[in-house]
Length: 266
Image 1: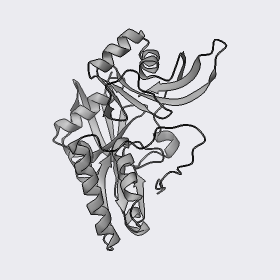
Image 2: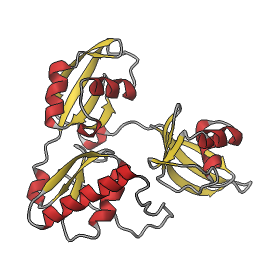
Image 3: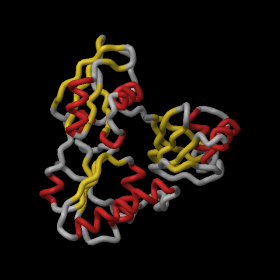
Image 4: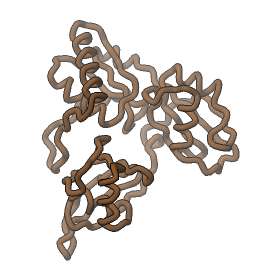
């Protein structure tokens, strides 16, 4: 089990700095992590359920203030949603994440991530009990906490309008578990949100501005109000009605002085 350690703060490229909690839910989450860290400092190992990348960033900022060992693990190398364990390495290694293979009939059924997620939530499984849902040649592998995995195997019979078969399976190796991403490139006039968003959505900047002003856009899970906000490498853009995108790389300049970016849609 290869736990993800805290990343180094010395980055060659410019990335977004830490964004403090922006609402009461995030402040409550920070207080909970502080309580867990205090318990772990007293010798009691503690683990969360699956955290989003935003929650991972908040937790890492909190834990930088405590002299405790911790790790993040999502069931395979490169996972996006991960469980945080604060305490000894032995406690970290004991974290149990199970993998459920969900296979639709027919195998070529047109199902998307949101269909599988919706079906799992429909069983009464909480979002925090569900990790990554990784596409496979037929169906998906869903990483779940043990109780949720048992419920999925026992009860999940349909996803959308298709029948499915759900079984416990071994987690795919890191490379096999990595979702296939279609990397795209574009050139933008600047690294302002409206310019980058317009390129990702293949829309006009006016349309991108309207998306932001309507409250449909979040960057790294934080709602954004200004279309002129600067964006950075590794930012994640959630656009209601359009999906989720990641800005992977800010490259050099084109002949016309525009900035080359690389991104993908989840």
